[in-house]
Amino acid sequence: MGTTAGTQASAHDSLVLTAKFLPIVAPFLSKFDPRYYLKGLNVRPLSGGGVTICATNGQILGVFRDPDGICLEEVTLVIGTDVLAACAAGIDSNRKVVMRNGRLTVIDGNGNDICIQAGNPIVDPSKPYPRFEKVVPPAADLKPGLIGVINSPLLMKLNAAAVSARRASGIRKSYRDFHGLTFFNVGGDGNKCTVARFDFDADFLAIVMPLRAENDISMPLPSWMQDERDAA
Image (tube, rainbow, N blue to C red; front, top):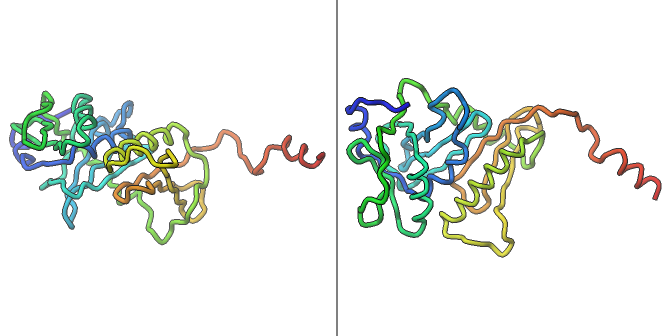
């Protein structure tokens, strides 16, 4: 899955990621897709500074802007469970994920190693990672509201990302005790994707692909409910 050429590793020696942001995108990593590169996190430099951290399993895509991240050129990285656990455990300790000697390493605020991932984490760069720009609809086409059929496990992934994003922002609990999700549809077309945002973090965006309905629900209420209301 990873490459073995040291020259590719050396090209990413300057990589720096804010550790607490990786668990936000991790729920969208692919687990079963034969396209093995979807099992990695894609990191890309932004023209205005910082980086994007992106993951997708083909049904849902999550992307987060790390304003303090450093990446000179795009790279897709295999992230092990130990690294993710170290990222999630150090929310308040200013941990970073860096590349040291071709190994992903989680360090604390003083530069001390917390976790070193074995093996070269870089996924074969000849396998192009999906472009989020191609699936993100133009802002002018988006309308507020959730339309169409959504795969419920994908909503669970959004909730897992929201929990991590709230922790990363330093918010443990809100007085409402929930993670606000705002949805946008593409021109009222239920056959097109849905855009999901967090109401407490402007740096996150998710694209959810529609699910083909098993049964067409053309009426907003089940027939028995309408019959009961008519009989009342």
